[in-house]
Length: 199
Ligand SMILES: Cc1ncc(COP(=O)(O)O)c(C=O)c1O
Image (cartoon, rainbow, N blue to C red; front, side, top):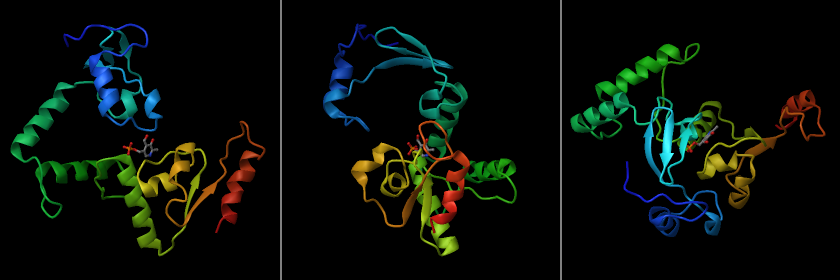
């Protein structure tokens, strides 16, 4: 646990204030960024500097899915970093090939290879490039109710308003209406059919 003094209300403690001054907050008006310092996390729980304890139902951004500060994860990272921390793509390690094999066991149909990326947006970028290379076609159709990542290709296929500052984005991306009734004038099934007209 940190020695950090708990704070109350919206007042930022020293760490939070330093963060606000020196770290660019994502997807935010910088003046409105108000970071909350986390001082401990374990399993499904995390604790803030103000002493508030949270049960984390989403593993933050769906990333800490084995629980916070899991010993098995920390030990595996420690072991691998001490053995080989980094290799160029044309080499391999037992860990890389074994993870590829295990994923092939659970991926559907004849999918047998995994492209390893370090973020979701990089995976989206790769998917766009692979689809274009494989089909020889250019257009990418995506939904308005979507978020696919922050890099240029991914934000170009993103529908949610975070895309707006990046428009016009990369060429060849088209948005389709969603099969979603709430607040829409389109019948959900009609919007499914509309994708057919976007060629
Ligand atoms: C569906 C989907 N695709 C892509 C991303 C981007 O992932 P990352 O933040 O790891 O780049 C996210 C992130 O929330 C996502 O929910």
